Image (tube, rainbow, N blue to C red; front, top):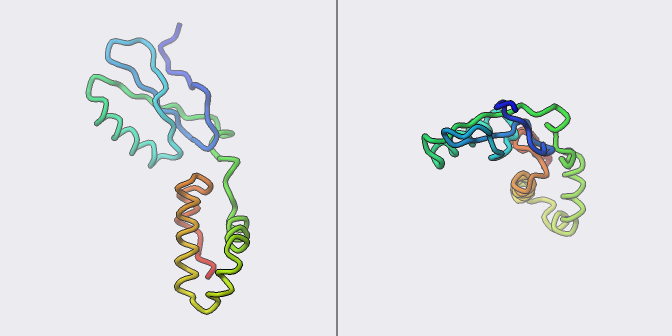
Length: 129
């Protein structure tokens, strides 16, 4: 049996799997998934602080087919949904551009926190209002 870490049940939308083992143990166990390099770095730092020096961590680069979450919305889909769910409010606030911009920002923030869009989408989409 190999001591090389193996991926366990890869999840869609993740690029890396984080594995851990206690000092002296032979096999790594699943710890978490990371969406990108920044997420991986953040999670590894947090787990090292939480678990302590007796634990070792390894990451596995998952196959590309898992990297993109199939549930991600496009900007066009997100905007269409925003307009559909807020049709009356948008009519009432037709001339209040700052309020419309803030509402779009709040909506995309919710989509990002809910995992419906990525952090990259959230940070790069221009505000349509």
